[in-house]
Length: 241
Image: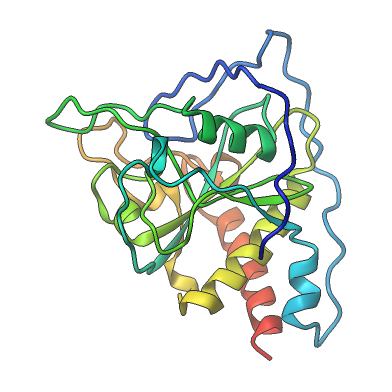
């Protein structure tokens, strides 16, 4: 699903990457965090809605990191078996700003265990309350979950934005629609839609990350996560009719 790439002014994002991704980042220019709007999301679809009806509200755009640069410097083919859901914990950047940061190489990955090679973070989609942006093909491995583990080798990474003033409910709804579509496209079962928490990071403390943090309970998947999966399953069933 291609669309024109929107022009953005040069953005200097002072992002502090701690862990593999989804790390807290102070707002650019300082200032106090304002409450996130947890208001109503996109309107639910009516019974029998088609895939096109559901996907239109995703507002999916393509703004790929150029092949051979930054996170796509080394091409690693992938046959996706999982979908991994993250949250950015970056209070100052929406999906377009994250896309620009990935293209500028502003997001450095930490050292891999047992080595000193440092690369760049990259995932497949960033979603906010207005748009979903694709950064790399879904048959290409990203760097978003667990270093050299199966989370990176076999999963499509989706980051959910939570910038100040954003509508998290709308972001969750858009993410659920996108995940349902990717399940159909790649024949991925619902049980393989997992939070970042699912992938332990060898050598990290704690090994299982509290991510996406606003869908975890006491740092673990619980009722909120199951509710999110139910929303994905609803859209999946609608699309599969």
